[in-house]
Image (cartoon, rainbow, N blue to C red):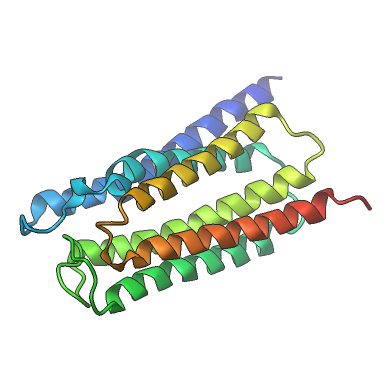
Length: 215
């Protein structure tokens, strides 16, 4: 019992630390770019985007923490590594493609990270890298959580709740992106993230259906 209690405490600390890393790497880094740079007042800035403030500061860190908690609380399952790798590569490629489409757009709506067509600022390049990395990391965590929960002999309620909460946080972030669509250059970033989400749901649904189907 003592070992179980110690593991549970560790499982809370690591997801909390991961959530803080996402907060610092996302919203924290963009805040540094914003406060240390000079930006035209005519362009939408950092705090004009709900997805960059509420999303990067709350939804993404919480999603990461919830999914990582679930992954660590569940036993390893067969197919973990290839499933996580494939979904990570797929989602990372989609995230990268969304940023490339944004940069290549001929008539995008400018903002502080893309002040004119085909030109990212330093913050824009950083954000593109962050989007790509977050797509890959989120995909891997979601893949592991789905694979493990569907193969687990026991499905503790806190773990199921954590997966549901992580998915809910991801959907909240998508909603915030949709709310920002009028200010997002060309909508390319939004389209890419939505495409990645659809792909992940399709892959996850396929795996769940395969795992729970009668044999």
